[in-house]
Length: 109
Image 1 (tube, one colour):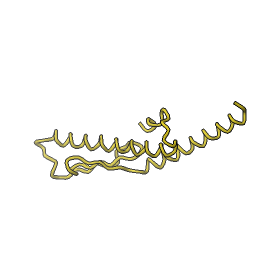
Image 2 (cartoon, one colour):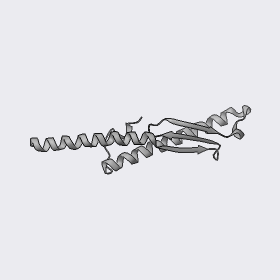
Image 3 (tube, helix red, strand yellow):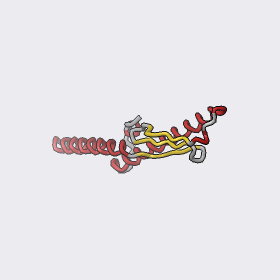
Image 4 (cartoon, rainbow, N blue to C red):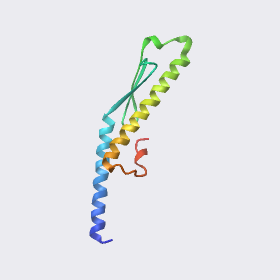
């Protein structure tokens, strides 16, 4: 490989890395929602895989059945994080043209 080809490859890699950083920053600003219990628990997560908010309807709060509320919260949180990860993966795949590059899927986890 010639020095020019190597230099061009390095420039492309650097440009891709900058673009990945931009996409990561944009993804952190995006949010997704997931709910459980027919909307009784709603969780919002961002592209940094952080929980932004949890909303719980008053009707689902029952001191005699705390386990049900815990299950609803866990289900909504897990779905919100799954959706956020999917959103980030889709954003990254636009950059890579659909190529599956090792390590990109775990950049936020």
